[in-house]
Length: 171
Image (tube, rainbow, N blue to C red; front, side, top):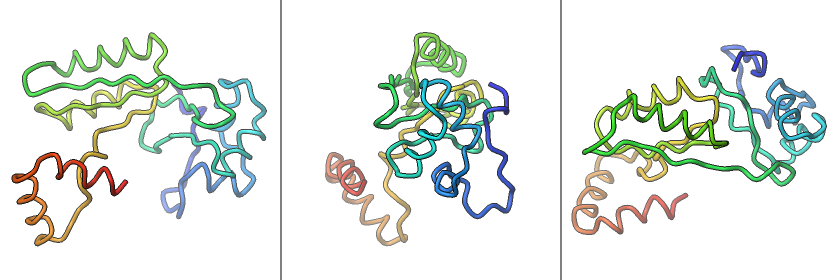
């Protein structure tokens, strides 16, 4: 997708969110593209984003993104889960899974890779994707001071389930 559907934020911009612009009564190129895709009025999209009833997951670093929305006035969305494992899958296979997901209508793709070369895999997926990409970061605990991290590591060794549930409960 070309940059025509993407906002141009200044490097020194304090806030780079669709909600910030929507609350300033600005209909962004992303909102216009969402309105086109969803068959909605651009002003309705702006109002829904401003109220927090619709989101446009449009990371400013995702150059090829074709903006979409999730919200009460938007269509139901389809998510596809892909990812490598320590025993299988290559970079090319993960990009192929992404291509198939997009071809068959995925609105978003979640990369659940756990194998080798995770960073390179994610970079290749994001570079090839026109849909928003999520990662398994929600399973990882937030950064902690060193003593707390050591305690968390000891808990994880004693009880892997508890270690996974802790960050999940935290949000």
